[in-house]
Image 1: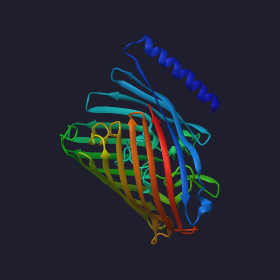
Image 2: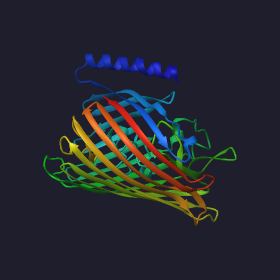
Image 3: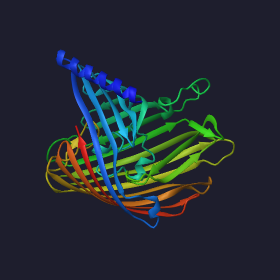
Image 4: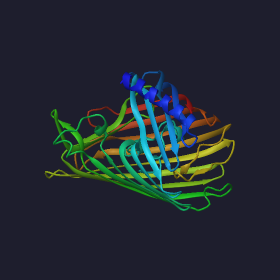
Length: 386
């Protein structure tokens, strides 16, 4: 992996030099560094250790040539280096584009961006459970002033880390995802309210699954961590075997006017099973209430159908409530239930530097094999973006 990182730096240097030679070929370096500190109060204090961490550092570049664009970056997290974004995009015109590679898949309001554009300290557990994140696939996007839509096809995560020989290659899991959003035509204009409603749908075949050390494709595994990166512990998780397929949906809502905004999603997922096993249902919901204490008003990013980060010298307060349920009595699955509330203060020094101060309360119960767990986290993050 270290050799691969060295090769990546050499390639990046070459492309930067190429950009200086050809005025049509534009290269924009990109990256981010997160520095966290956390103190925990919990009846299960032994699970959560106070301290500091660098949960992620990224280095990459975006490339532009006419209607073509690309992004390549690698990340360093907890002593490991790995590929993050690696995609190529062709823009047919201002409304239509096609992307292929490893990128964030469209499913719900939280899906278009990573940590840098999310207002909470960490993505709510309710969203982290069902938002797919970076996956290898292709996506078609259409957008105009009143509509944003994206449809994607991706393969399972193990396609990037495992050699898929026969018959596993034929069994490789896949997923089809789509996000459709309506917004008022003047949402991007200064002084107008932002009103947005959307619906995302997803269908997946079973992923790579280990049963008694046998590598087969007949199940799904999903989980979410407590909303902190200094001490990483799983909050809820479930493994569902003997699966045929998975269907999920999430309606989303965004309302904003001047210095106030509300963001919300509800998630529902059902896994169809074979061999006379009962289907498994799971659901979750979160609500973010955002307010700017001082600074400019909220603005809208029409290309991703989300709120933009506030401008420099802005202080923002975010209240978040989320609930997730991975326990289904009818099917006998007890992945746990999580109830959480957190308060985050975000200060945007400039477009490149943000500080976050956070208190998060999370309570988990009804998880098979685990005692009820409560976490109180007091956290600080410095985030450098470029």
